[in-house]
Figure 1 (cartoon, rainbow, N blue to C red):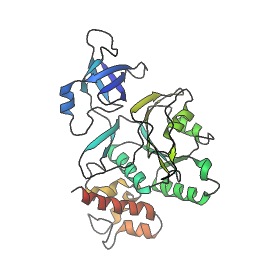
Figure 2 (cartoon, rainbow, N blue to C red):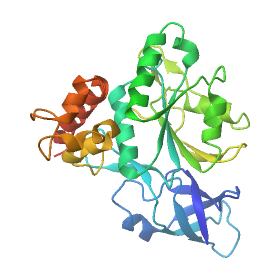
Figure 3 (tube, rainbow, N blue to C red):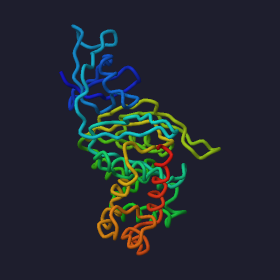
Figure 4 (tube, one colour):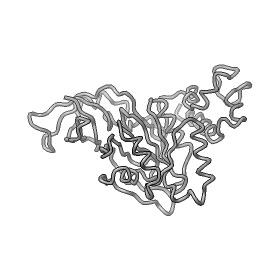
Length: 311
């Protein structure tokens, strides 16, 4: 029998035969754990698995046994931000990744967002950027809102302007998430749980507070969990991220996953071109012409430098 992993609690899981929502407990057979040992977690929320029952309907005393993880159509994976090579699969078989950011409270880190976007490009997941908490800074900082939207819309991404508190933009986001499976991800404190409650008030994930000392979010979601949305579709809530390292990406490839660079890179005089110092570089010319934002280009340079640390 086949089902989808809808909750990951370490060594225990919940499965459901989607699109029917009827979760039941399961555990992982040791052989599967060994076979999928490249990442720290052999099974991720969103994985489709084959399972068997131990002679009775699955319950806490007699969980189903996961026998096989089926091939993934895509996934999101991150590397530890220390110098180890350990990697963790955040979620699999996604229709989109909803990347939640805030300009302030906590303050946005564009290189962090750009690493998330590159990972989405690498593994074939369509990203949607949600700029949350507009109620806090649209009036005091309208230029910053416009600048952020211009940077990422100019790169080719969908940016939704939202406020989980006032409901601004929530209907548009609900329509985006109303079919398929959406991953909700971002740094701690950006309001992911509040957005889930705004999308579907019947859901009640924990809502965290912001640390006044550091203006950073405190972790509230500790598990990876999928929820059914009353308006259709499923959404995966994840713990707030404090770092995001790239996985399986050669430095020569990084620019291919910046859509605005890819559009002009074929015009570079030299191939391959690192877009850093070569004469006749079309990417640097586009940067000078304002077609590529300096913020995105600086993120690219940071990834090239970061790549050296892991080699």
